[in-house]
Image (cartoon, rainbow, N blue to C red; front, side):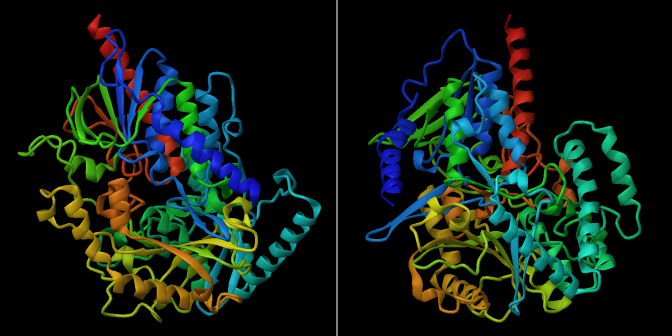
Amino acid sequence: MYSLLLKQAVIASVVLPYLCTAFSNNIASSESNHQRVVIIGAGVGGLATAARVSSQLPNTEVIVLEKNDCNKLGGRCGSFDIDIPGVGLFRHERGPSLLLLKDEYEQLFTDCSRDEKTAKSYGLDMKQCIPAYQVVFEDGDTIPIGFPRSKCAQGLSLDEIKDIQILEQESIRKFNNLEPNGFDKWQDYLDTCAAYLDCGLPNFIEERLDVPSFPAFLREALREGRWPLQPHSTMLSSLFESPKMIALASFQDLYVGLSPYINKGQMGGGVLRKTAPAVFGLLAAIELHPTNKRAGVFAPVEGFRQVAESIYKLCIDNNVKFQFDSSVTSITDEGVYYINKEESDTEKKFIDADLIICNADVPYATETITRSDHSNDEYQERYDWNDKFDFSSGVIAFHWSVSKRLDALNTHNVFMSANTTSDAEDSWAVLRDDDIQSTSASSSMKGTPFNFYVHRAGMTDNTACPSGCDSIMVLLPCQGLVRQKELASLPRKEAMEAYKQQFNTDVINNAREAVLDRLSVLKGLENLDEIILNEVIDTPQTYADYYNVGAGVPFGLSHGLGQLSLTRPGAKSKSHNNVLFVGASSRPGNGVPLVLIGAKQVTRKATEKLKSMATTAE
């Protein structure tokens, strides 16, 4: 405990002040002989793009403007601490809690480090979670899933390997109890998903041609019932009999903001909008396939803030400059207007730029800071978003610091409603129906079908909480914010107060009561509310306030075929010649690894444009 507190004290007294002040002075005066790139937002996309551009064009001045203070470095990819006197420090994740496609993180450091330092050298240590998940059903059935075939490579002790093997055998038995030959059917499904992954990732996500991956993809796609563009539930219903098996095979659709179930009232069963196509089974392969080289669920040691802080250090090594507490209010092709909130008089500033890369959420940015038809001050902070897009679900997040260990929970837990096919389909309504009021206080959620996720950080990383305690995060899907156009012209603070009313105390209490009831099916969680020492609650309004995300949804735009690949907002701005976008709502999509891939693609476009501009200037 003492060493943990000492470490936190060092971070607070040394590292964070350095983060807040590093290279933040006099950035408005351009170096006449150098091109300048201004990056709006120090989220993962902004940080990764800054590191890449600066490492590839070392004579280019790269400046990052971030509206929040240094404690929110990384945007949604960050952690926060709760210090309870007499107990200790609890760490909670504000955004992602599981790490996928580990090699994408490692490649960033390999590509950008000037002295061949690795991700681990910068402080990013990634530990695999085995099993990847525990799935918990309403009736109390549980099943651990996600066991890599090779366990010795994970640095586990013989005792740990033995315990995992016992769990794996239990998992196989439970699969076969769900339906005859359940485990064999599961493995067959994952193999199909792996073929989708091996072809889809390079060709459609990374945008690089990989011809050898097509034969296996086509072989699986042409098998009976496995056409990748049909609704996910159509494929799964042809493979599995049990609603629980279908739930196990489809819960990852939540991450891309889609329901797996066919919508018979829409073209193609809804796959253009809010129904997941079967190809998104590749998400199951990313997390759960036993032998695929890119598969596995990991946890960053000391939390996801280590991801952001490690990339920040990489940026500093590449001479990237940062200014925190700097809220961009308007973008032009010549530069950006921003407010430096560190100044006592909220100083208004303009910084010129050859190229602007916007890491702010696309629906927010295109409706506020890139618009040129605002009649009022360029320095007025506003909040609004383009609601013509389809969005992922909102989230009500409960962050609980608890006084006991909750050993019935794994690191990653998914609670699914799947007693019947009807219950399973209804549990996804919040992702499917435009007019759903799932968080309405007028009707209780308790007893209704719904799905949610629980993260127990301390099981994998003992730095997350004091000994004998646990840090718990519950993510409950909900409706996003309902846009009120009349709030767009108000000062940002007034708009945020108005949007806060969409998730009032009654709504929160309703959600909490329903979640606690579902958690009580596990041993030791029957009276969980009695051991909660501290509670922090995030709603879509919270995410909107902290991160300027459209509709307050932390996952950004959904990934129906109408907003996927070439149909998703691209990097190039439609209204500005010198503006590019990077982040979860632009191409290729949401989730940290996809944002890191997007940063590579945007960097390529940025360097090409800057080189072209330099040639023209000559």
